Length: 220
Image (cartoon, rainbow, N blue to C red; front, side, top):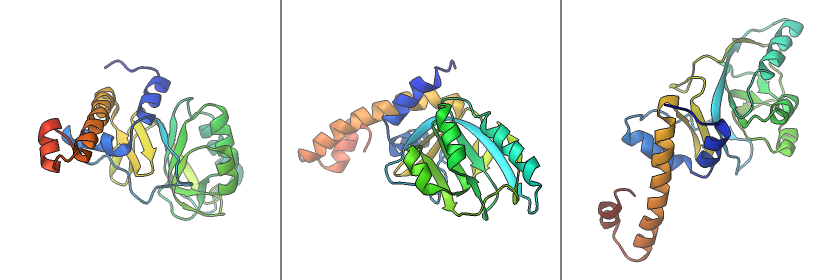
């Protein structure tokens, strides 16, 4: 299936909400695409949507500082414009994303970050108004405690396999990963569902019973 420009699709996904997207995925048989609920936005109201640029690492206590930071900085410079950086850190001890990294990502047009790991410099990141979802915060840096092992390759986050280019959408309810091969179909169906839900909403406000509204519109 032909893929449009990331920005075109991102704007349409941003106008939706994750509940509608997961409902569509469920009906298509993709029933395990929701990321762990522990991955929370740094501030209420943060939203993101974009194709995934995947990153994976592992704990490595005593890692050489210069070697480690050069790998991390090279990776940060590789995240393409319009993408969401998706980290599987396999770590629960350090911060894998901070304010200077966020400043760099934002300056180059990245759409946000999802970190199955830690974040720090939160106050400064919030000033950048850059959407970040993460598992925890800590002041402890990852450079001498962690090793970047791969990027732009499939990762698994909370049992959800995410390949480069899969779409990530996040809002107040959480995060969902949409496989690239069904992205445009899911987008179109989710847009139809949201439009239909406006009719359902009007019907139930007008006194229609829930089952009656479902039978009439095919969704609830």
